[in-house]
Length: 487
Image (cartoon, rainbow, N blue to C red):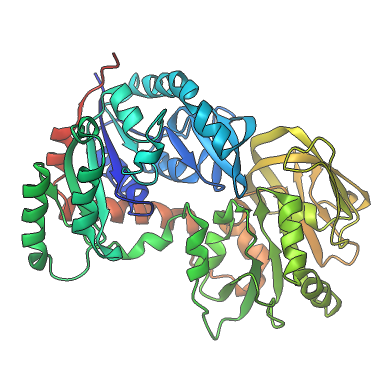
């Protein structure tokens, strides 16, 4: 019978995703069959699963850490923000609706049977399921009909570890305060607390550990030291992109427009890892650097809205000037659509129905359609002949003369488009830069011959597991896990 343990946070970004990934790898290396699970996630960084759906990128990474293929059961409900107050609702990997936050909050309880069914499916094939909560465990205003935290823990009878982030300051208050504000019945599900991201001498926090234990009545584990190589793993939250340091003396500069609804931004991770490449995330209000060799328009969850934001920042003028000066432009997915002559949304799939004028650098037109294309692809880069492994995750059909010049070939059919001058190109393929041979072909002789990106991710997961084995009593955590029994 499978056992399960859930990790909730005192707030968002306390390191739950990384902890679960590291524990998945550690338990897998011990010979246990382990799987990750997140009842409800909110992220525009998603991955395609082997069963033809999509889940949050963090759960895909956790599946990789578990040495398992990602499946939709690992993240049965995924919310992909399209507007400030609304999201696309993905259930078991497929788009079900676009809903306002208020409507979703009112209706979400109806999804609990599907969440529990997905959890049951995972439990049937593993020894341990590690569950990740969402946001803050103390959001008592959102407790009714909750799927993500205590609502799920109670429905599935899963014990909880509460994680606090010491980097934010006030970690003792945030941990003890969580117990103070949540319902006592919910607090009863918490079997331990854990202090994460510690830097310095852990002996200096021993009194804090004891204080937390006394006030909460449960063991306080850790502190777990800061894992310095966390940035080598795909991130779930686009907030981390704004922290990319400007690296001087690099031989190639790629400027990336950080759009409000940027999606699947882990496409950029292999480029950021290249030692000779400087990836500049251009923030709203900033001009695109004139010295950039390439401008990359990334994926977008709300293409027409992000295109309007691009113009509001004046980036359309920067892109046109860059192209006139001989610069190169690449658009990926939504960015590819923006490079064309028009984007039409006749059914209002991403918002208000209508048509937006594109940037006009590719002779293509896109019409958004309700059916989302989700599939893993094996392609060939048309210009270099190198293999490209990637995935499609988009809504829309793109046509036009520049599609006669393909960016890639999939089963002999053209994919993407290239301009007549060869300096503007677009593709729907996400994940393409993870392939070392293609990335080297794309970057030319400026790519590092020594960077093996996928191998570096595997090594980082192994290092994370070793880090947790050294600094965390994993046996004590396993002792907290209980056999799954859904009443």
